[in-house]
Image (tube, rainbow, N blue to C red; front, side, top):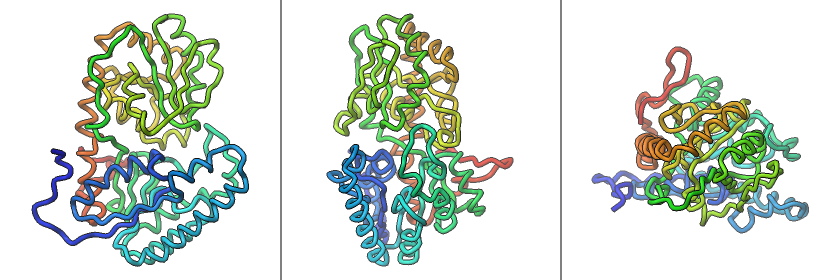
Length: 388
């Protein structure tokens, strides 16, 4: 029996929540910050309606090359869907906006929804207030990068995915009790170690979207060094755009929702390189949580939430130069016992701090307007959180 789905002994009044999402279930933010919580929320008195901007069948067209006319039509269609959300927002107790209601222009739609519903909650899990340095998006010229701070000011409650994002929110919403930190988490019943690993290969893996490919390019020299030092090493990058790896045979796999967990379970170590800039500092380290839950040691850049998730030499290593990346990966490749020890520590860390079981009750409290005391507070000028 799944303890998350056991209803509370005393029924409360049904709370109607409209979740406004930027993507359908295939989008990581939508899937892991809303969709996976729905069974728990519904079992505890939440009547949830989920409204992505586009459906699973239409959203991929936006990311295809070309098809300009179709993309313009889809943008108009998405706007009409959001106008419908504005009209029906008056029927809900809470409007929960993940990232933004519409990608272009000022937050007018969100303002109208906030006026219609009793409360508005704003959730963000990336530094969406700055343009990306990892990829170029020509549509950024139509974006309002001040929208995030405007949404923070207008929302009744802010849910930030990391300490760094919470500190940003606090600069625009000084009432700290209105800010909660909820990391992006996994259901550890699904993301779990695969059991006995077979074969002599040492698989170094990464999973993400094509937009993260620049981070992998930054460790190209380390990839070459590891390949020379460890003949058994193989590299599997899921969701990345293929690039020149200096002659190293790298398997570039297409990401699919159906194979997501199995792909991670096929790795022996998970990696998460980042640049050290504002965009990367706002990331929530979700890759690391997914890797560790699946029983993997990790190597990552010491940037942003990564530093809150990884304990150096306990469940993973930090690396900030090509030499450090190569050294950490070679050490793990040469020492299966060390990998096993890191994997056990990482899995335990996720179960205790970054699991759906731990975070779901906190999200429920936020929706009800009763977030846990000390969920987010200042200490010596820095945003901190209590232990889950």
